[in-house]
Length: 443
Image 1 (tube, rainbow, N blue to C red):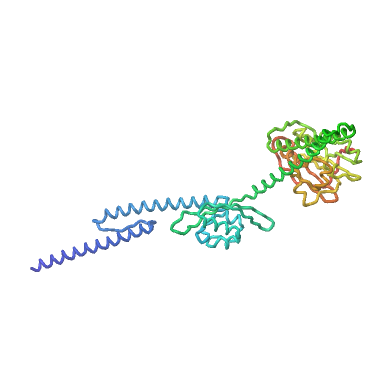
Image 2: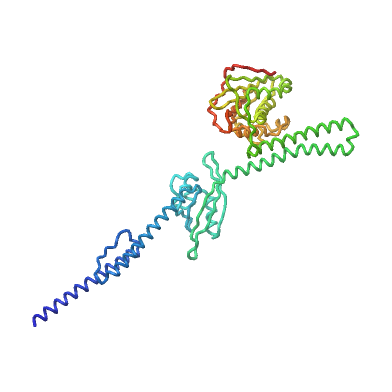
């Protein structure tokens, strides 16, 4: 009888042990399921379950491995996406429905020169720009893509940005925020302004001679031909302004071809000193009429280079014409100084004319820019001479610059590579006058 009780007690103890082990295994299994559900799959489960639950353990571990792989893939994709967004030069940031910044790339901080990250602050707090806040607010409220422009000033720097606001997918009755992309359109706006000014200037330059020609034609048609002196005067004026129109068209074509490189340079080996002599000889009449003095000096040595003779001649013709036209004063002197500097040839064109105001010096190579607009109309010209100089010199791979002191004269420096087509940046050039080894005088 005692043996039966002992056997029953042992069986009960064994059953209790099995039940306890299974209960603990089930608890471990539930804990493992919670870990997988919560995304805590960075380490193996290691549940150590009873044999009867080993199949469930294997399935759970397989699920955990898949979850780990998915988590790693998602992390890798997030890192790649963050790297892509961070490298985009445009500013990108997201906001919630309260206009609080959730994420922002480095482009945003660079564009707006922010001292701290905008994340966690509202748009108006982060950027301090009322127009920007209004545009973003309208984009979120309208629940459709929205665009607008803002102007941001940092000291003397002024930039124009375009905001593209795209609402996020809405969840629930209230807006869910938006993605804002900021584009820097300062250069585009500047080019638009240049285009408008260019069209306006061309229109003005064309309209003036056409109006004069049309007026004299009407006079001749209405009986002016009967008055011989009137007819001769009218024909002379019309010829003068027709020539002005022709020069304007030629100058525009020259600039267009130089900028687009549509016509290749017809380069040849030439001596720069001989080219400048030909340029000065063409102005022999105006030089004598103004009692001006024009000199060509050089440092000696090899002054030859590969260049398009006709176009390079036009460069120095324009520089000399400008010096004579705007420096028209008693005792006017224009000096051409040539020297070789490494693989470059430098030509300084110095005059003792009235000089150029400092605020105009950075603009004088722009199309139609005139320092003294009223006087420029009187002296004639298309207003394209220095723009042609710049474009032709750049087409040769060189550069042109100006130094001027108002009331004391100007120095234009042209740097040209001796060989084509390799452009070489010119070294710093001093405006100080050099001792010449050869001198040619006109005047």
